[in-house]
Image (cartoon, rainbow, N blue to C red; front, side, top):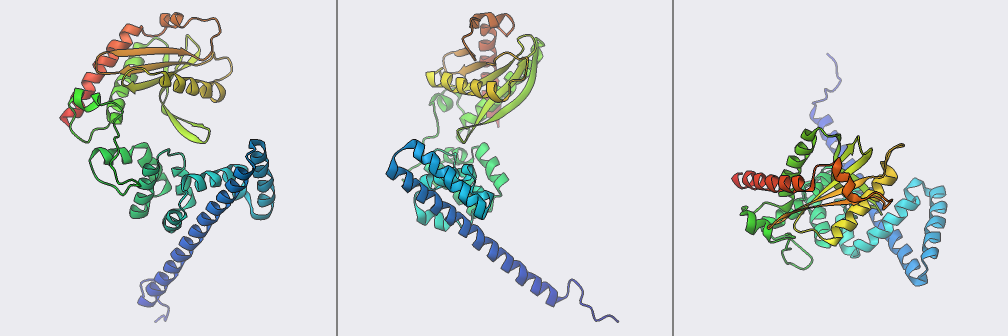
Length: 332
């Protein structure tokens, strides 16, 4: 009879548990230590740059520091990461909050939260990560699904910096005009309409090839998502499509121009023309469609309509898609 212990022996089970608990403790300690270190590094660089007030000096400081730190401590201190540390110390300015969260959130978690431009929203996701143990991937998905806004619409009070529920609706028309029950977001309506529009455009059979939905673009360290991206074979150019709930605003034009510049630089292939953009606006009284060019190169915007669906047809389709989206969401 062998004297060897089986894997299920109480002694082995107990010691394994002890080892795993120690590993978890060490991991949390190291994670917290790194996070706090990165915050302190970012804060110190920020202080140095603020005192000098020269933009060029700031760039030089980052590059010089990075060169030395990478040589001595590894690639974690490359310029891009140093700038993240600086942003970290800026957007999470309260060290007490950072110290508390550092035992639950990894540095990668914080990196996902940095592009969020609202402190209440950042703290909401940080708290949920701590409470529910979201992985970085789960965190990214929850942000994309707008978990914060959904919770706000559900009238659930959250611990916020000013203890006030946020108004998450851009346009009161959304609930009043459509008669949707509480809990539906503008994002739900947009998704439903976009699905309709995507199918409509592909059914046209007039040269459109689907490329991507929710095209991710990183601009100045922040994530942006283009609703729909197609390629038009006859026009030989990318066609970016963005849906807006509400009337057309000048800021929509600026946003699309930003997207077109990014697509022109990073997605435009050899032999293609500069991309163009369509902005579809669905609002309470009428629908609007705006067409933008990448460059004013002598080609009039109106000439594109000979190959694209007519403006009238698109406006009609947006209106029909909005009605169907309303009926679908209201019945759920």
